[in-house]
Length: 439
Image (cartoon, one colour):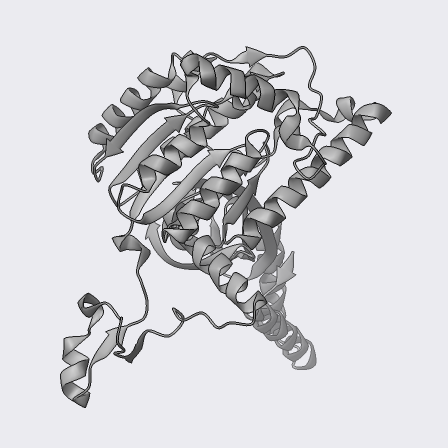
């Protein structure tokens, strides 16, 4: 326990009183000095500088302002705390309710995943004579959001242009009007001030339509651990995006061969409307059956190998297509999107199958002016534990699978797609109870 400056002042005053009493042969001075020493000793012995902290409102959204309430309980203790985090920007205000201190923290997380909130400071007794250092941290989870998707899309586009030696024309906000610019983007107020036509260079993604594509194909349905399968995770991710969306969007559910469901969603406001929407989506997805596996073996056949198009999966798919099952599901989605308003396409998949059709779809959509982001679920993280990694043969296949996946993601990024790689440990908090019906 440390002493404060007030304790130092009292201690020095007590020493002076004792010294004066001794030199002047005055018992009152000596008695006063000894009383001060005893008082300091008594306060130090009875001081119990401890607090208990509680967190409320721990649901954080990527790149969105969220609120966290930290309640500090402590009897006969005065805390002086500071809050910080390496994973976001935050500010806070404090209010007092008796022995309870409430810190209202406004935080903007940088990215999804883990968020660490550091609490540091000092704890004082009621008279502020003694203090002790206090340090604690809390781990929170940040969920994906529309704002995060917009940020990744813009960042990926800028990096793509810079890698090609070109500057992003969307960085600056205004420019002089040129032939071919959209007249709707003219800033008339500023144009009148300078007597020249000024147009806005920044295209806001809020004005763009949003399309959520959920892959429920055979590879997404397979699992070795029922309580951590990819499909449940993908559905909870989709619901999280829908709940946080402030715009109209369209949900398209597809499998390996066709589109299963198209569900347009108007802007959802209010708790009960969100609940009804979630129930409708989950009710439809109940018919999708999961496929259990005795053992997970990574797929090591890459699209970059020779004669890949002649492999068994393509032969089987060609046969099923002729039997009326349709073409690839992602191609069907692309044909539908090209007839709709240009916007942002969010694809939730595992990059395990139908990669060549995915590349073709990406090329078509980008040429049409769509922005694309892919949430790529990393399959081994859902199907393997640490004890499974003790097998040497499995490790070799896992490495080949990882190398193939890395090439696919690199190729997608080169085409202008923002890829968000997701593993099982990037858990989404608050998965709805109705998801248990899918298990």
